[in-house]
Length: 502
Image (tube, one colour):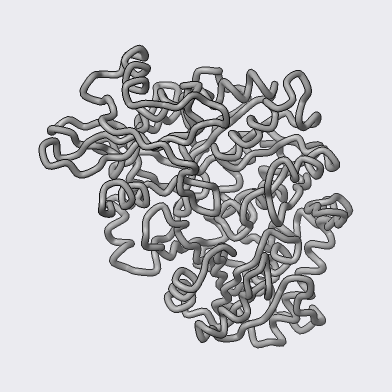
């Protein structure tokens, strides 16, 4: 991290970070969307006017404001306006509906709720009324406005809980995750430090801004002073025009995004699908080594993958100067200040980027051990070089006849099979074995039909132990995924093919 970025990373609050960056480079762009450009100076000035408008509506420091908005410049302005006021924000993914939204509004005690109105054929204002939400206002094309002279001083304390994020649904029940400005700044600093970016780069936000990755990524923009293209609706190949128009140098999101870019590149062998692109980066879901090798080989760009979660927005991150082996097989290294401890194979974390817990005190007590380390539920080990290797999830270990089997090990091997587009391996209840190993596969267009015998023969050739071989194969049109970073929802596969949850 350069000296300027390092100094900015010491900011106590997100608003202080915005103000300091705006003073340094007021005329440089920070957000690009369609033909619109927002500079760092405009981000500060317009967010203050929005904050004044919110203040006129009754929003005060500590007021809980939920917002369910798409990835737009207006969304960023509203969020930073709330940060300027010192309100408590509860971002809600815009694809969520009555059950999840109602839960978030009730649990957070939201006094105001910002919605986009009618968006992508769904009436969010009507849903808000149906749920009995308080203080509903639309914040899509227009935002509250007022004279900043009415505003109280900006918050000075960055360690007060001012963010409630919601776990995005790889399990059925969401949890309210409590963050501070400092924990979000620490997460974004980790990302920025690892990627070695500069003011000449152009990033992209193809994920929901309401996801924890929203502030994570925006902190990086503020630290280094470069812009990002925002995509309200992301789909390939339609989005490629914007990537090319704005000269995006850094793209990504998660493993599913890498695969989408790869699919587009393979349609045009010998021609770079995004000429300016030099780096794919992301996290949020496991990355099979074959995906790394395919991106480097077929796209001619580097791929750095990291490890994060709603509770800890950035834990480790691969760096462009890592070895090929570490980039392919690890999640990168933690930044200074992130402690990783392996206890009985489980990854546990302590550091400034770790959340303060959950809205439910019982969930908080269960999540942290006696020494204040967060239990992640992920399994892994740390190499002598400091790189973290994830081997699976505690709940993703299949116990077959008393033997532990890692679903991730099988998934990584199958990801290299030419007849496999994507795969998820789950354990299903079985009377004689306890659990059986089931591979659920998406196939690429035009691929030969897979059979269980062909899959097990391939895995034997790859050296997989016989007791780990799948005993069931299911081929599906599409794996069930969440709407944020496109994580596979394994609990739905267990429900569909095993007759129960888990």
